[in-house]
Amino acid sequence: MVNLILKRRLSLKAIAFCLITKNILSVKGQEISDCSIVKEAANRLGESKVKFSSTNCCDLDVVTCNDKNVIGVKFIGNRCFDFDEDLEGAIDKLASLENLESFELSSLGYWCKYPKNFPKLKKLKTLIIKDNSEFSGTLPEDIIQLTNLETLEISNNRYSGSIPSSYAKLTKLKSLSLNNNLLTGYIPYSFSQLQNLTELNLKENQELKGYIPKMSKISTCDYGGTELCSLKSTTCTTNLNNICTLNDVTTSNKNNGNPNPNNKEYENDIKTASDNNDNSNTQNSTDKKDNKDDKSNNDKKDDNNNEKKKY
Image 1 (cartoon, rainbow, N blue to C red):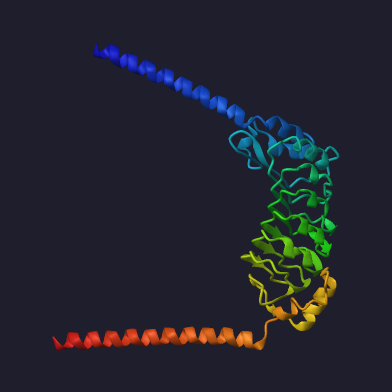
Image 2 (image 1 turned 90 degrees about the vertical axis):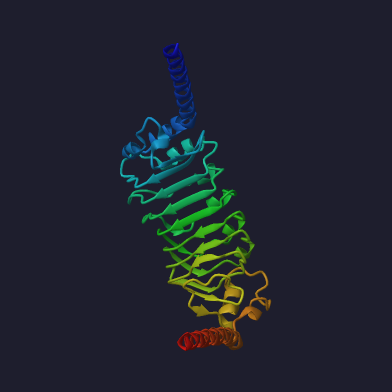
């Protein structure tokens, strides 16, 4: 009887294991349902398609999936000297991915050109275009059609000229990185409309200058290697070594698209010597308090030592 019960239990466990395995395989099949589209896109990449060689595209480093769909794709290190490589054709295919939220185009070869059909990736929340030495000219403005963007990185390329004021239309942006290019001029006044922006990286654009428009939520930034300057309202000042003068403000107002360049808004925001003194006094007051607390603590220790000596 005992043996019969054990056999039945083992049989039930075997059945349960088979059912679980079947369900796992079924779910796995759903997870890679978009892989056929990714494969079609990869077939437009010439020799670079080998990076997408896998039965399940979700196992690849260049593809990100959730439970059911492909949500991220990276084209990294494509050479483009192969005439069969068609970046725009591959992006056309990726446009069929209904849940694609993230796309990266980086470290491309000398023959690669900027694809002009990014706007077809309508649901993108993250777009990264970096480390492409052949991407030059002015910053691309077609990407402003990607109105769901929350993260935009266009870094370490060779883009020059001014920052487009049209980028202010990307009102959902939380992070913007335009560092390590050849950008010049002033931050557009219209950037004050980017009220969701918390991260801004503009470092190593040596000819960027002027004040930083009011963006109250910025908490992470890097302005190293620029000629930008700070005001009272500048909420993040990492590697920002210059304090704006009246000339900086008036010149910026004339060149950054300020609709009312004679307005005193930013002139009244200039840091003064008294502001610096106030900061210094606050620091001195804090130091004095710390010293007083230290002295009080030392006196208490001496009293305790004297009491111990009595005993």
